[in-house]
Length: 279
Image (tube, rainbow, N blue to C red; front, side, top):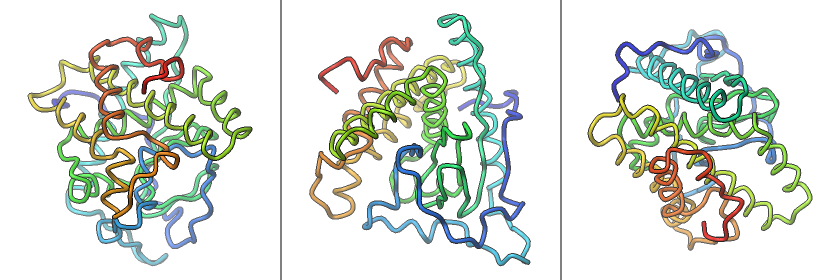
């Protein structure tokens, strides 16, 4: 992805050096409010612990991993591209103002109004404070353990969490969360799958809009990432037989298909995952 000359977003809260969340017990995650690109830690067969940043003692200064500052700069620039894209779409299609989310960079564990989370949980969006949370070590997890390599794969993850913020801004997130609270666990999971696939589709719309910044192979990196983090594949990787009623993000084929739909159609109208029987 060509990001040279692209500005860095100012909507970044860097908690890596502040000590907030380090050394504390991670609280219970608020299931309805927390939206993940995938819950890596859920799949017991995937041990991401060695890839996570070691937590320093409270009196020990934080030391960034090699390349971590470049990852932070990369994330801030990708976030800026989402701001440009969604500002234009909200203006042109909704006649509205887009209020971008804050991206929180943390190391190991952190706290949010949706509960506590660790790097093993994966990146997540909390609608309560309208912030997207990212442990930069997850980029290594994607590449080394999940087989989702490449800088555009990492950019897709950021765009996916921002897409949840878009859903929040237009009211979809609130309606789905209200419906989930009244539904059975299986029904709630099915609604969450539609929500996540829509976020994948909106990520595809973003990717099409930043096409001038893409390099050969970038689209395939994003499609491969979507494929690698499907519920069915992750459950198989964990030594489990896929159980569709437990899916919360969709199959590999579904995630790849909906990202591709957003990319090809370049229109958010194509991302109506709630109005179709075929996911």
